[in-house]
Amino acid sequence: MPDLTSLSTTELSDRIGILRDNLRQLTEQAAAQSGAANEERLADRIETQSKELEGLLKEQERRERK
Image 1 (cartoon, rainbow, N blue to C red):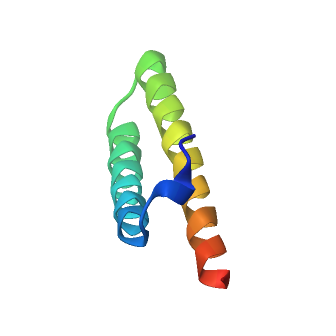
Image 2 (image 1 turned 45 degrees about the vertical axis):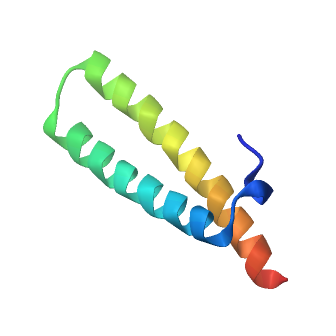
Image 3 (image 1 turned 180 degrees about the horizontal axis):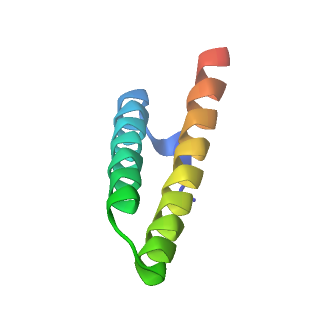
């Protein structure tokens, strides 16, 4: 996970939006595709993106509390 404190507030918000869109698209792909290999790969990508989004949201919340 990169150092999120180095991101500007705008960059943080932009990245959150990008990750939310990525997760929406990955979820749609997972629903449309079948096959164990595809499902596992998409599940891994969703997990990675979700963890990154969680970190960004925590950083955003930390900044808002200041």
